[in-house]
Image 1 (spheres, rainbow, N blue to C red):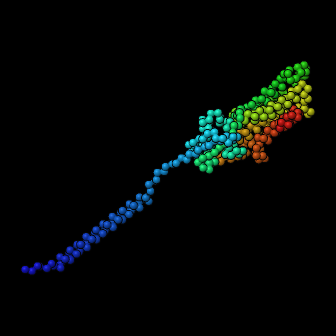
Image 2: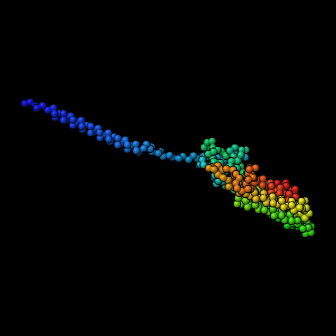
Length: 326
């Protein structure tokens, strides 16, 4: 028996069916690829997974030597890079209680400058081991104490001379001679000057939290107290001679003295609140206050007003010591 050959029509139908199926499959694949491409593009670029950073804190070893004997006092370990000289002094005091932070001066080398408390260890370290030399600065006092002692003394000393106590002047001569009005005015102006100093020290000036040797307190007090005694002795003396040009000289000088005192105060207030631009402090500039217009002429008007006050006081009282104080 013979097999019946397939007809040409059936083969053509199969060929056409397979071609159509292939086209449908390719078309679906293209659609899927096009859709997937749009999805990927809309999602944006792939973001890499952020790597976890393990922060490393660098520690230093501080070796402290005696600046005089060059012998080792102690070693401070595990000092962080952000630690300041002030922090080192605190740790040094814990390790060696006899070394008080206010009395310790630290140097990078013997004979070099003392390091400021705000300096960080990282800024001075050349390696992981830092060698510092310690010096005992002696008895220290705070700057606030220095200023208060400087200004309180003249205020009280002048009042003692103004009262003409018997141990300073002859009692009979003091009782016999009356005070000239300028003597009372001079006492008033002198008290205003130092009361302003005291109030500004307490409420205006930003006094440093640091300390200074006791000898600086003694030197400053000797200057202020000594000149005050010299001035007060002549002005309050029973034989004091009033100004040559009388009331006109006294009045003009007193007004100028008060103007200079007011200007000095306003400038000090302005300097204690500087303008800030970002991280930088800008030097004060003149504003609507007429006393600040002195900035157009000088960079530190507070000293100009200070000199003006003492010159006015000298002309008002017509005494030489007041002029030397200026």
